[in-house]
Image (cartoon, rainbow over all chains, first blue to last red; front, side, top):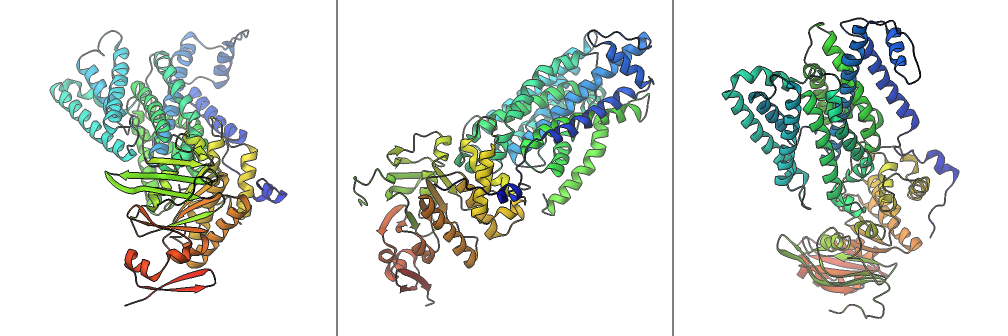
Amino acid sequence: MRWNKLTDQHLQEGGSPARLTGKLLTVASLILFVSALLSLVLGPVSIRPDQIFLEILDHFPGVTIDSGLSKVEAAIIWDVRLPRIVLGLLVGGLLAVAGASYQGIFRNPLADPYLLGVAAGAGLGATIAIASGATNGEGMFDALPIAAFIGSAVAVGITLLVGGAVGKSTSTVTLLLAGVAVASLFTAIQTYIQQRESATLRQVYSWILGRLSTSGWDEVIMILPYAVISVTIMLAMRGALDVLAVGEEEALSLGLRPERVRWMVIAAASLAAASAVAVSGLIAFVGIIVPHAVRMVVGASNRLVIPLSLFIGAAFLVLTDLLARTLQSPAELPIGVVTAFFGAPFFLFVLRRRSDGII
Amino acid sequence: MELFNTAQASQGLNLKKISVKLGGKTVVDSVSIFVEKGEWLSIIGPNGSGKSSILRAVAGLVKATGGFTFEGENLKELPPRMRASIISIVPQIPVVPPLVKVIDYVLLGRTPYLGRGFQPTNEDINLARSVLSDLDLISVSDRHVTEMSGGERQRVIIARALVQQPKILLLDEPTTALDLGHQQEVLELVDRQRRNLGITILSAFHDLTLASQYGTSMALLVEGRIADFGAPSKIITEETLKNIYGAHVSIQKEGSMISVIPKRQ
């Protein structure tokens, strides 16, 4: 055998494979950090950045500094802004990674994380919770996310069963069509309930638009375990997704078990999307535009797109939320409106480039 | 028809009475083929005669019955990963993903050898670069596969198959999309790799002239069965082509080279 004859020429001109370098990670972390910082400093109540810095430093173990903040101001930082920022980071990261993963599995750059019924299922769950009055009175924030999460899980579950992703030889097209059918069914039921309980319309509507309102750290704590599990799986599968990009049959001929990868990634991405939707409603377009923007910069390799989407998605949603709560301060715009306002034109732009054959 | 004796059967690729059913229809019907190690068997036959199905069955991409062994090892029982380290296939119409660089695409051939995270090591990358250099592709390795011309793209796909370090290379009509010059270039390249590395090749061919010039032996497939097997000059005759392809041709022989010339009635 005569493999591996290597000259200096190869090393210089051989092309560099897609790799998550320290440089890329540093840039992504910086973007994330600056977005979070801006969001922490700006708000309807103005608090001096240096005082916020001292206040946070004060909470480090073994450090005691007087930040000079009043009790109310400290509470705004710890119980209002920080949990909301962390929730924004989580939801944005989850939606973007889930979108990137779905796009990898379906080999379609316009696939979004609500594709297989997550949105319709959550919508129905939320509507039932609101209509049945489970969200009124005490603990009103408890029933809604749980109902939305269960709704998502049921809808995706039915899609996977009907679409046969559990079996071996189904195509992703069957799965997509099953997703469309299941979503229509769930939306129909939701509309029926809304018709009967018209008093709920307003509340359901505001939920559908998406929002990042928090009651302390409850929402963050609630979705954190699902976020960790789903993101870990999707990150681990990013190399396999690159193999799957050549189609399931060729992937099999390269030694991959495509149905196993498909099954795991869809389950993880749906879990991620369902967790995000449960606490934030239907925030549109994050799952499409973030992976796309990442792809435009670093290329299509999922080795890069999946991890970088996590960072950029988190940063993007925190910044969007900053706009949503400051543009008409003290009133708040629904965050879904802001993401759609930027997302829809971007989507059209991508669609146009795509039809030109560039992507 | 018994095409080989059992004594040599352990040395090469041995397909014994293999059958493939697609949608209830038998497309490959009890075919037995033997290819000696390092040889190149060309399978010819009209459209729908089952050429592709035989290749896909060997690669484990369709369900098949019968015996598949290579150097005495049972290919059928191998998990996909192990099989992919022995067999690589150049599909008739490969899926070329957008925005993927040549080096990344070619590195996909290392998949059966990578660990859990599918991260290629420096050795994998060096191997890919060395194959790219052999195939005269090193200068384009940072370009996207989708923006290459037909001939270059086919070389890239063959590079991926070679980076897989196969013992058996399956080619499914590898020259269909190419012009005459690129057809010869690609087949010469494959033949050179076969001689240098001792790869066993099984290929489906549409073009009978090319099939006869590059294969070391030939099988004629008709309706899922082997109709003839042996040297190209024995199989490709005016009469056979008329009976089986319904084609009117004249055959020219120049030494051991055969040319098939279509004739208008």
